[in-house]
Length: 262
Image (cartoon, rainbow, N blue to C red):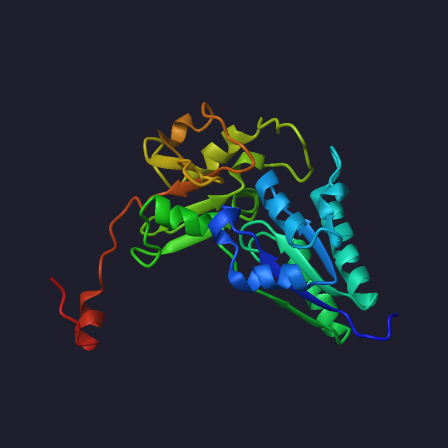
C-alpha cells in the first residue's frame, strides 16, 4: 500500500451534464489522483476526460452482454476500493444522483469506511428531480412513493392510491442482466396485471424520460395503464402514476390539532 492514505469521493454528473455538474463535483474530478466514471452520454464522458485526461478511467468496461448486473457492480466496487488501497485520492462519477439506484457507490463507501478510509458522497440531480420539474409534480402534495419496478412487483408492495407513485427502471422489468442493445419485455403484461390490482386499467400514467441535452424536450407519453404493453419502454423510462383518489382528512384529529378544515 502507498505511504499516503487513499480516499473516495462519489459525485453525480446529473442528467444534463452541462449545467447539472456542481462546482464542488467539478473541483473533485479535476483534483483527483484517479477518476472512475459510469456515465450514459458522450458529452459527460468528454467533460470528465477534459477535466482530468490522464487519470480518468471508465468503469463501463465491466458491462458484458448477458452478464448479471450484480456481478458487474461488484467489479466496479472492487476497482474503486483497489484505487483507494493504492493510496489514491479517488473520485467516482456516476450519472444522475450517485446514490440513487447505485449499488456500487453505496457499497464501496460502506466497505471503505469499515476499513478506516475516508469515503463520502456528494448529491446530484436524478431523473426523479427532473420529473418533478418537467412534469410539474410536487412530491409533498399529495405525497410520493418511489420503487424500482421489478422489486415493486416481486416484493408485493401495495401502493397508496392517495399519493403519486413513481416506478423506476420499468424498461428493464424482469431483467437482472445487461444488454447493450435492447431488452425483450415479454413480462410487461405481468407488470400491467399487478398495477391493475390497485388502479383502474383506464387510469392514465406517464412514461417519462428526462432530456439529456440542453434545449431538448423530455419524453412524456400519457397512456392508460392497459396500454403500457403497446408503448416503447427503454432502460431510461420511468413511470409516473398520479394519485387515483383524493385524500380525506381525519376531522376529529384535525380538530384536536387545532387545524381548520374547509
